Image (cartoon, rainbow, N blue to C red; front, side):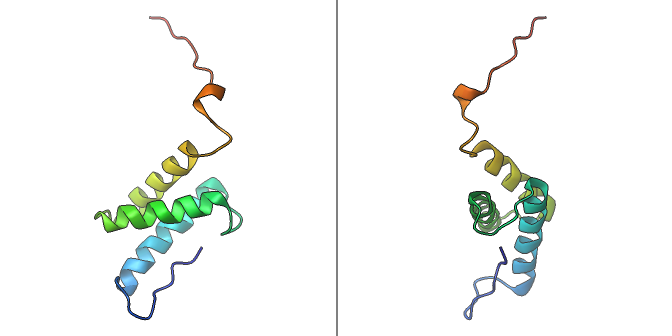
Length: 88
């Protein structure tokens, strides 16, 4: 999902490049094959929101997007995850 710089940009081209790099890294990590995937939308929204809040680090943005996408995946819900009991 490319981040296009609109005609009246809020962000510089360098800002868009950071967001695109973070998106690309997260999408590659999650093997997102299409920009129409739900995970693609979650990645893009997470990257943009975190960037707006001041996170300008590509690796940090990508890692956060991966975490959010994995945790919001509809196929995995808390009721389906069986916690392993651990004893000291």
